[in-house]
Every structure is written in structure tokens, then in C-alpha cells.
Image (cartoon, rainbow, N blue to C red; front, side, top):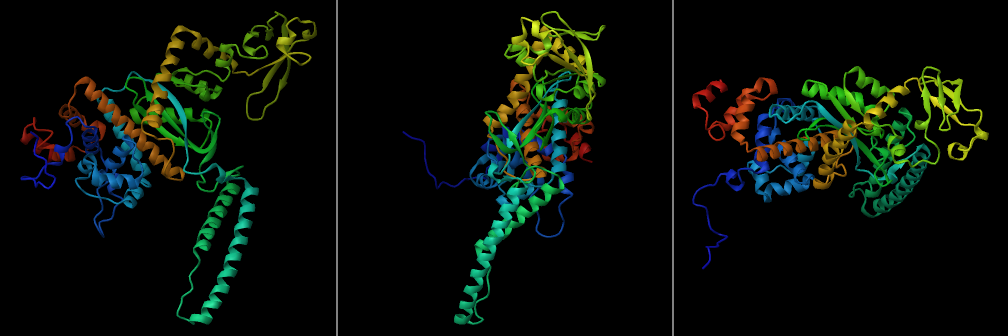
Length: 516
């Protein structure tokens, strides 16, 4: 005996879209969060004239849900709105086309930043942030461009000349064809630019624009496809046109509390901006900062010390020296005597101050040298020069103090935490959600993509906390409404949207009062 199976069966009563999704489905959580956030900044960019547009909340929901389940292509998202019940629920059975989806994602950078802040604030109100310990890291994400399209000035000039030659050749051929057609058809056939000429003309315009930017910004190379992308080294040694995604992750629930995207390969200049973003978003500066060697510099250590932040950041040679993998004696085993302003080598021979080495953009270095290396039994392990020389930056005590902190049991434990706090976030983005390459081009547009992925990550963390702690959506929404003035939630919209469903436990009069 089987259950009745009839694909042509008609429904007796219309179903609610919600009935297609389980109560704890992530799409429901995403839906309620986006209903709660204030999107008036995006809404204000739309005109009241012309055909009504799709609501920005609808567009945000399907884009963010796509990022959460590894569907980012606007064409794929359009397809899912017709075939996937979760997308149908989020769109209320509306079907924006892929151009509309792509156009929405390509704009509204400032508004997406604001929504990121609001979601972080929701996490804060839910108690998902810790006592101020954050891990900072960057990851290289490939641009939507080929490495072969990165060229220097000479390469651009060569291609411009080649394209002009090809365009002239096509034009000559087109003129000959037109003359033949004029004799044959008279004036009845209009002139049309050959397709190959259109493509090459557009290519020439792109290359000329790239060359102009290269000259204005004094760059060594520029990518023709995406002028803002820079060649960056990835894990494994490969070099690709890329952007550098920066995040600060709170240690309690792995919430991204600050994020940015830069076109600079090195992380060292990103410390101050990310600290300021954390302060602006969560209202306080971190108490402890964990970061890898890419962020170490004397300027950064001095900055964090001034801010009263306890930092754990190794220098570039810390791990090398800890493993003992070095051909020559490392500088760290030479003991500095502050009182006598000299060094002692591993053979306990004094290395007195010799001279000053001038530097234009940094403090001058002091040089210390040994005069007895030729007589030392350790010379073959120390230097291949006639005598060993040691340089010292006047701020080198910052590096030495940092190394002492990192070698303590507390320092080892804290730095170990960084690996599973921030690096796992990038693992979730790249491995679980397939975020290894941008779809859009240009720094402003890819920033929108990166921030959307960070918002999707945080919403996923909200889902995890709700399931783990047994919290339900009604309780969370009530809490949001109580703190609406602090977290910037539009109370009226929440109350109206959930008056009959989510807030069923509240008195209707109370809801009406809040909506007034």
C-alpha cells in the first residue's frame, strides 16, 4: 500500500511560504535579521518615478543567503528564486532578473557597511562578544582578472601599437567591403562596424585607461581587466592579481567585529585602521590583540602600547629563530649591554659601538663590531665576513620585550588561540562557502562582496548560538526591540512585520503602542 502520489493534484487551500521551511532554518533567521536592520539609506537612493523597484530587503536577503550556501552568481541566484523554496520564501515569490541582482550588488557600498555594523551590534546585544580579545589577520583573495593581464608601461605600449595596427587593418578591409557592397546594393545597406573592430576598440580604450592610471599613480604594473587589483603572493608561492581582506575576530563566538578590503599586499599598515574600525563599531578598543608577523613593526607596537592594548605579535624572525633553522648565528643570541652600550657575542667577546648608519625614513641605526673574529673558533658559524657587525634600532627594546612576552606560558597560549579564532574564519569563507575569487571588478565593488561575505558569516554565527543555547527567535526579537534605540533597529517595521506571527506572546495593544 502506498501513499497517494499525484503531481497534478491541486491544493484545496493556499499554503503559506513559511510552511516550506523548518522552524530553525537559517533562511528564517536571515530573514528576521534583515527585517530588523534599517535599510533607509539604500531605500533613499531609489526614485519614486517609473516602474516600482524590488525592495532592498528582498535583494539583501537573496544575496546574503546565496553567500551563505556558496551560490554567488547573479544568474544562479535568479534561477534559485524559481526552483528553491528558501529563495521563494525570501523573495515572497518575486523573481528579480540577474541584471537587477548584479546591479544591486555593484552599488550601495556605504549602505552595506552600515548593515555590517548593525549586524555586529546585534551580536553584541546577544552577548556574543567577549571581554575585548580580538585576533587580526588578512587573506589574499584573487581578483576577477588573469595574471597575464598585468603589464608594465612597456607591455602596455606594445599592445596599444599592436591593437592600432589590427584596427587599421580591419578598417581598411571594411572600407573595401563597403565599396563593393555600395556598387552591388547602392544605398540600401547601411554601414555597420564589424564585431571584431568593436571588441578591439573597447580593448584599446581599456588599455589606454590602464596606462593613464599607471602613469598617474606611478605604478610598476597594472592589470588591464581590473585596474585596482595588485599582484600578490598566495600560499604555495603562486602570484595572482588579488585583494587583501582584513578582519578582526572576537574570540568568544568568532564574530567579525571589523572588516576591510585593501589593495596592498603587506599587512603592516593595516593595524591602525582596523583598531579604529573596531572602536567605531563596537564602542570600545580591544584589550588584547593577537596578530601574525605580517603586522609587526615598531610603529604598530608603539601604537598599541599608547592605546593601552596588550599585543602579542611576533616579528618576522621569531619563528625562524625558535626553530633554530639559521645558517649563521642569529642576532638574538648576541647579548646587548644597555649600561655600557655594547654587545657580547656568543664567545663572550665584547662588540663596542662603531658608528651611526643614517636612514632617511626611519631612525638612524647604531652599528657595533667585533675586532677579533679572525681568532674566534666560532667564526665559521657566525659570519663569512672578516668581522661580524650588529645593527641596533633605538626602538629595538620593543622587539625584545615582545619576544619575552611570547615565550611565556601565557603568551604561548594566547598566540595559539589566534590560529583557531581568525584563521578558521577564513577557512569557513574559502573552503565551506567557496569564496576564493571575486565576481566583480574594481576596489569599491569587491569591497561590497567582501562585506557581504562577512555579514553572512556573522549571521551564521547567530544561528549557531541560537541553536546551541536553545534560544528561539521570539525571545531574540523581544530583546532586540527592548534595545532598539541602542542597536538602531527600526522598531515600527519589526512590530508591524511580526505583529501576528513572531510577537504573538506580546499584547496586541502593546504592539500597537510601539507602532504609533
